[in-house]
Amino acid sequence: MARLYINPGNTTYGPVPGGEVTEIIGSNQAERVWLAADADAMLDPSFVRGNATIVILGQASNSSIAATVAGITITSAGGASIRIPAFGEGGGLRIDFNSGTFNLGTDDDGTTFQLTGTTGVQEIGNSPAVVGSGGPGGGGTSFSLDVGTPSVARAIDASTTNFAFTDNAEASSNVRITGMTSGDHINVTNAGATNLIVIDDVLPDTGSVSSLAAATSAIGFAFMTFA
Image: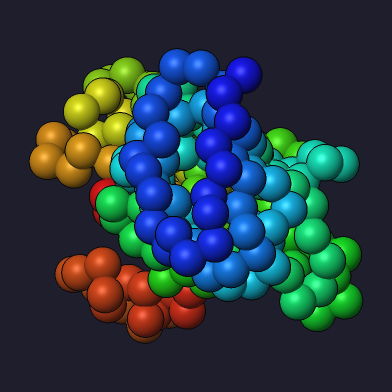
């Protein structure tokens, strides 16, 4: 294991490369550390005092986040493993991705870790969920929509729990979702190919819509984002 000590006054460092595990030890001052998209890093408790930032050189939608007894872990298919120690109410950390900025904190009584971004507040549970996939009400259970065949749609019941759906538009998708609520969210990556996602009975009886903005307004929550 490698150790990186950041001296007081050094406000910016990095990027920390992938490969060997690196323990990053700060100075309790406001610091900004850059991490490669495949970084294997462990932050020390000085980073969760509410005044530090980590910059992850990758897309939020390619990363997952989960909570453990020891704290929070961010992983990615590219090999990243970033461990953030647990903290109480008033602590936290800013996390910058190439695709957006999030603030890691807790709920009002400090019992649940939360990630706040443009899509709302994502509650961080024990099961990994795509970063930024949860609208208000929760992060949700990760579920890929890259299923179904061109001739047969896969039926998905979203009423059983909160889902963080992911859809890679470069892969084939043909799905029909029922029971979708404000705890569910669809994150589409590599937009450009044609995919078929049907969401049944989610629009109010106000007629059809012709854009994502109009659908979001009519439904009443941010149900889909593109990265």
